[in-house]
Length: 114
Length: 110
Image 1 (spheres, each protein chain N blue to C red):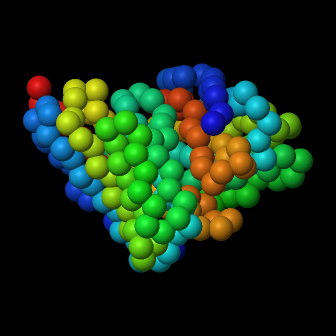
Image 2: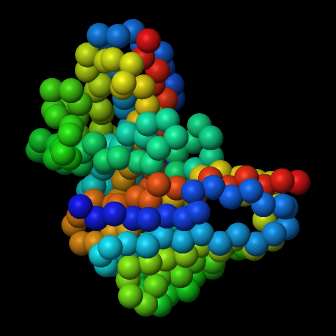
Image 3: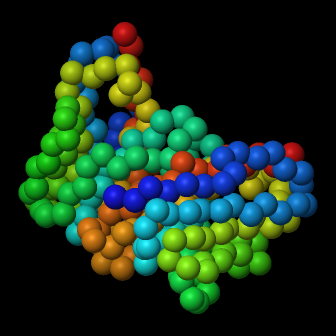
């Protein structure tokens, strides 16, 4: 398994601002992912964070809105840019350690945009 | 894209009862995963299934990977109050992203 931490755990932000969420893993992993979970909903993949190259975004998500960094094999950031109330969600970091076909999730960042 | 149908959407049960929930897919998966999410937390992996027909237990939890590779179920025996939460199934095939079910919200009445 993997131990994943996220910062901040929650935040309340004003419309039009940006927030950067950090994800730290206790071991080197190839695959890191960012998900969004809107209130009462399931998980939606935003993008796969690739080390040393640009992130791969899913349909409906773009780099200008959700820029991602992956400077090394244990760390990634997701920025939610120019926020609106519709961005209020839980944002989750996930990793696949690669030994078995599984994914582990961080505790999430609960974002509220006013 | 692939769709996962997870049922039931919600359950209200008495403490001590057994629980069963399942997921079905329109296409096959190589891996089925079951997660539990408590309020304000990230999903926690409960059971991972890698072979068709595989039956795996984790304490009071038992899950099976369907023979057709298009379905999986999760059973919880003798439920307790801390079983409350949302249970998600997820399927994986090759290098494609995980596909999640919509979740089963479990409430346990003491």
